[in-house]
Amino acid sequence: MYNYLIVGHLLKEKGRLIYEPGREVNTEAFANSKIVQFIFRVIGAVMESRFRYRFFGPEQIIRGADIHPGQTVLEVGCGTGFFTLSAAQFIGDQGCLVAMDVLPASIKIVSKKVQTANLKNVRVVKGDAMNTMLDAESIDAVLLFGVIPAPMLPLNRLLPEMHRILKPGGTMAVWPPSWIRQSILRSGLFTYACKRNGVFNFRRC
Image (cartoon, rainbow, N blue to C red; front, top):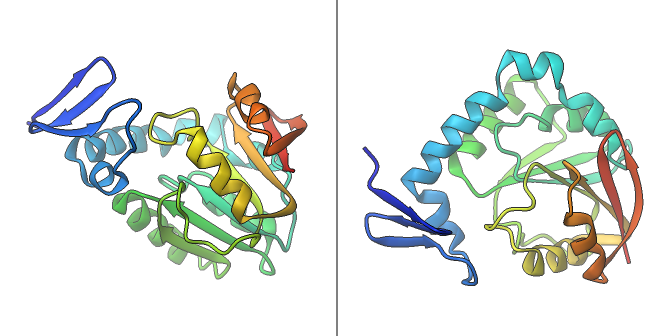
C-alpha cells in the first residue's frame, strides 16, 4: 500500500512533500512519486478504454487544432499516446511531432506505440513542459490536450516557455475548453484565434 497523504492541496509521500501550492514543483520528484505513478495507471486504463476510442476518438479533437501537414508540433503531456498517433498521421511524413511527458511510464508506452505503428515523424521525449530545452522559435504549434488547468503546470511558468519555443505567429491548441481561456489572454503572450470542435486555438503574439 502506498504511504501517502493528501491534506487540502498538499501531496505527501512517506513524509516527503511532493506538491504544495505556491511552491515551485520538483518535476523529477513528482514524476518518480509512487502515488503519481499509481494515478497514471488508473487514468491510463480509462484513457485507453475501447469505449473512449469508439465514442470519443482523438481524430475530431485533432482536427479542431490549428495544425497542418509538414509542421513541427509539440504535444505536451502525451500520456498514453491517446492523441499522439492521430496527430502524427495528421501532420504527415514531412512534419515532426515531439511527444513530451515527464513520466517515464508515459515515455515507455508511447515509444512502443510509435514503434508498432512504424511512425518515423515522432520524437518521444522525457521532458518538463516548463523547461522543454527546445530551441527558441522552433515549433509551429503546441497541443495542450487534457493537461491544463493543473497545479503541476502553473500558467505563469508554462505560458512563457510555450511562447519562447513557438515561431512568430505559431499556435497553441487547448482542450478541453474552460475558464483557462481568460487566464491565457491575460498573460499578454497569446491572442485568441478560434474555437473548433471544442478546441480553443491561440496565436503567439
